Image (tube, rainbow, N blue to C red; front, side, top):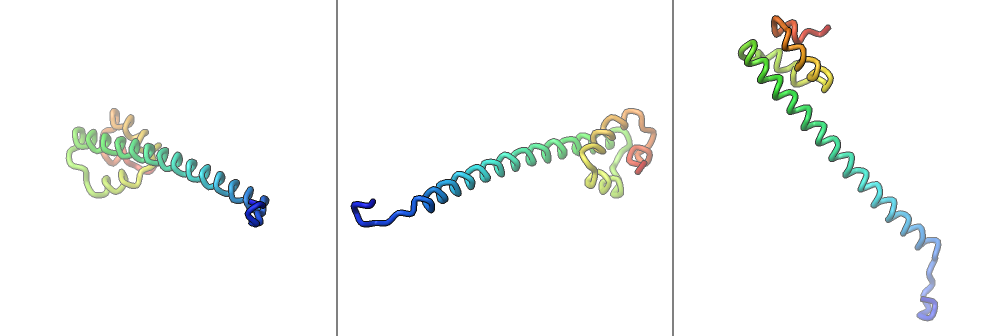
Length: 98
């Protein structure tokens, strides 16, 4: 480059290479995070689907208030309810707040 008369700022060039590497690493981490979140959401939706089916089989149609509780439930709540439905005597007791 010097023979061509071009001045090259090596510090700036190194900085650009480092920035490119950091950007690539950040992008890779973002993709991994998105995949993990997607899998987690998929498992949560599957748990919700199973619980809807269990409730329908045991208690009949799922009323609107119960649909709302199921749609807003955390993964832990869905997991707890999936087990608790085996001994629940009513939908109200299954989905109670306490």
